[in-house]
Amino acid sequence: MKEDIQTTRLGDGLTILTDRMPDVRSATLGFFFNKGSRHEPDELNGISHFIEHTVFKGSKNRSALQIAIETDRLGGNLDAFTTHEETGFAIKVIDNQVATAFELIADMLTNPLFYEKELKSERKVIIEELKMTEDSPEEYLGDLFSEKFFPHHPLGMSIAGTPKTVKSFSRDITRSYFEQIFNPSNLVIAAAGNIEHSQIVDLAESFFATSASGRQDAGVPSPQFGAPIIVKQNKNLEQAHLILAVPFVGAADERRYAADLLSGIIGGGTSSRLWQKVREQRGLAYSVGASTIMFRDCGFFSIYAATSPKQTEEVVDLAVAELRSVLNDGVSAEELALVKQQTIASVLLGLEDSASRAASLAHSEMLHGRQIPLEETLAKLEAVTSEEIDALAKEFFKTERIAFAALGNLNGVKIKREQLRVS
Image 1 (cartoon, rainbow, N blue to C red):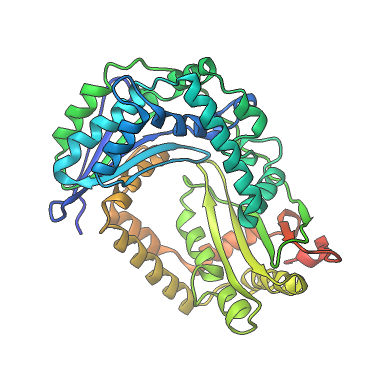
Image 2 (cartoon, rainbow, N blue to C red):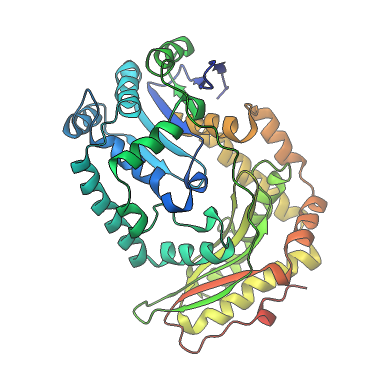
């Protein structure tokens, strides 16, 4: 499906991107602020996520109930999220409801009331959300890992904050931070589907162009990575959950294409090395895989698995062995060709969904300051060589940089640095 991308940049910093898909009846509108939890002061940890929640609690023109009713009337496909680097709101609607949907979200984002009664209620909701994380082994382990892997850095802090910080978010603090950060200078509006670029620009100018611009901060320094070994006991868990990770390239690094392919070879699908050796051949885990997480200035490669506590060390040994194998022996031409086909298919299939295309528009703008044509992405993937993958492994797969974290009924399990040796 061919891309038909247009861009308009307004004087206040607001960027409008559209990708027209005339053969569909859907349209996705995305409002992406290029600020997330890593941009918050430590004492306000979690406030972006708090604002993401509380803009739904009423505006000058709508009550919280009216926002909910209109959302359902439009189809109920309104999603909001906060990450370390962005805060977003996206809605997918039938193409004849674009203007109505745009006005709804614009009202929420330009006219929130932040009534203290509603803030008090939402503080309780988010504190319950934090408790849910503690009850979810994968999420809780991720938080434990991040805190030590990114020591004394916002990337190591919870996106949702802590009970202490959340309780401190008064109406004045919330409104002040909202006005500084959630404004056109930090906003990208991306629309994909059966839409007209001129309509989206007109709507954006109507609702956002007169908003006051706020603070543009100087950015956040890159983290210094830790290499912790964490074994956390929880006798109530049936499985042991584990993470093995190393620092890796960031999203702006040209080697990101090779990095994605390398993680795919190691643990990206059912034919990957880890899936075959850990699950299929030995039956040690139902869930096992590898992925690359990329931030603007850094990233990390990680292996995840859930297994019986008594099999933890065996799974760790197998995972480390695969890193060692890639480092010492490289990857085969067959593996590289297969993962290229898998990745290219995923990219092309994503073009069929307006939500995926809107998100891609915004991410490309915020990370690269331009739209990367599909042809360029496919060419860069095809051009990756085994030598480039070997070079990545040699640079990043180092024993002293490996981090390990495990959570479960692990009494007696001890992982030492020597067990993580890859070279």
